[in-house]
Amino acid sequence: MTTVFIGGSRRITHINDTIRSRTNNIINQGMRVLIGDANGADRAMQQYFVNNGYKNVIVYCMGEHCRNNLGNWPAKHISSDRSRRDFAFYATKDLEMAREASYGFMIWDGKSIGTLNNILNLLSQQKNVLVYFSSERTCYTLKSLEELRPLFDKCDTIDRQKFEKVLSAPRQSIIAKPCHELFAQQEHAHPQELFSEVSHPGIASMGWLLSVGAKL
Image (cartoon, rainbow, N blue to C red; front, side):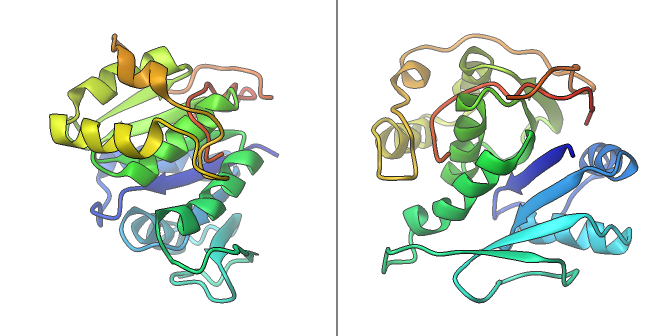
């Protein structure tokens, strides 16, 4: 079954018609959805699935309790030996979702390190990622690190420096490999209406999700 990892920035608390349209493609094709339990984009997307009566959802949570599971869907509880509930702690479940997914659909404000990390993990596993870039209200289909660079280049300088500090070197299980290539140079991707048809093969670094004939 085609499985989509949906994630996004905590600052994004509402979804617009562009995001709804892509989400409707997921619903209409009966794809399995993997989603986190955070406030922000996770919660907003959960609410949309609830409103549409969509059942094919699995919520990933850290520990025994989910912060948000609005549809009372099946939950997958991920454990960690980290005592601090920091970026690395919550990134553990995101890595699991990236591993299980066929594609990603990320709702990114250009500031969230966690969302960027998810994009990198998916791309590093050769999984295509549909990115809704909120500052432009536009979707980009990314299949490689090279196609991520132009979006990275559109982020504020301070945010790019923050990304580089956190993501440019391996950090335990969060990032599978360093991201030096991303921080070294940038180029240009083009917005696309849908995922192109592809085949299919943490927190890692960069990659390219090959689809399975399904489209978002």
